[in-house]
Image (cartoon, rainbow, N blue to C red; front, side, top):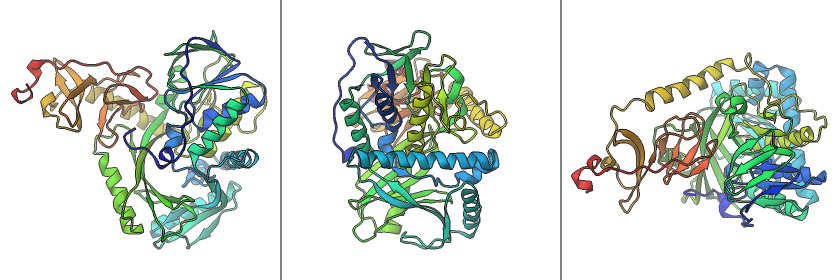
Amino acid sequence: MRNPSLWMATSEWLEQPVLHGDVTVEAVVIGAGITGLTTARLLLEHGLTVAVVESGRVCSGVTGLTTAKITALQSTIYSALTNTWGRDVASAYAAANLEGLEMIRRRVVDESISCDFAAAPALTYATSARGARRIEVEARAAKDAGLPVTLTTESDLPFEIQLAVRLDDQARFHPRRYCVGLLAGILHDGGVVFEHTRALDIDRGAGTVITDRGTIRAGIIVVAAHAPFVHTGFYTSRMSSSRSYAVAFRSAEMAVEGMHISVEEPIRSVRATGDGYVIVGGESHPVGDPRDTGARYRALESWARDHFGADQIDYRWSAQDYRSADGLPFVGPLGTSGRVFFASGFAKWGMANGTIAAAIMTDLALGRENPWAELFDSRRLGLRHGASRLIRISARTLKNYVTKRWRSSGLLRPDDVGPGQGAVVETGGRKAAVFRDEDGEIHAVSAVCTHLGCQVGFNTAERTWDCPCHGSRYGVDGRVVHGPAVEDLSPVNIRMSDRSPAGN
């Protein structure tokens, strides 16, 4: 990972084995983030045999790259949900997220998980009069949803605010240390976790997960891989993907207890840790945005210096999130077999949402009622709710597929790509994604995403090839680093005739 997060750099690694051959269990969970690990714990606690498969390392994906706020107050979600779905849905969403918070709190206490868990207020704040009006609307919607929020003009930020909506007794924690605690519980209860094992397909009829290391047969299959990698339901086409950025620095002078997020653009998210770091996040953009992603870090660093006097940035990282067109996560059955379940679309609020999703999927898998299953029902069509957003998602995908994949005007040649740079170039009558490392060596792979055929673009900050259609990402060597794609980009040979004399 080019830019490891604070959480990844300050937690132990409990290495798990790679799957070798075929395995039979009662339940298999795909994905070892907070949603997958929590689901595995719950299934084990109900007496099932469970295996978890993870394409990378435990909690090295989105959970390990979050800002780690556990809160039911999520920017302006309640005014949005009330407008789209109505007050009852907003109330149910608030209750579900409060229960997700309590599930984490109980497990931390009951199992003595050392993860810097601490109660903290959550605030959505405004620095302008226009933003303050939005805060007032959100406060009314949050109160109507049953949250005991208050309006305040005070915060512990080092600058003045116009107004904030505040919800007390929320929490912050170290997400990877929490996941290490979940992992320890899984192993203690007899579960198995396989790292560096990529799920490639699901045979719902046979009840098998096909991986690159072997096949796992199970009566229950849970997909907690952030984005469904199978095409059932075409969920990736019903969600938009975005990347956001964070920086962390030490601040001995300023004590920030609350968890803050601005209502104005560019969004600024601020929280601190128990050991003296301040985390500033924001700069969200659609995956595959052609603009220089390194500028996103520079903008956050500049803001941190101006507002916090940050002398040195110790960590910088980025994360990826999916948001459904209708504003609610998808949690529930994947297809009609009754044995496959999934969760996705947490819209950057995956700590509480992912935890309650684990409870929902566990109950559904065991044939039990769950009070929030209908709220997040993955089988909803959502044609009336969020239709305009769905149209925008579809239009953006079509635009990328047509204008980028099939047009070739203005493309560079391989030798136009400088050290440390990447670009889609014309070579041998086809497009190639070309990266040149600092030693001058060219790494060329297909520019066509293996998921559904859109053209990838270069992410300068992370040095990855990102697909703007459904959020798949690849390393410069073509290897998948983020789904829904499961197949790597194939290597491309650069022909000598396509290279300028300077490159020979």
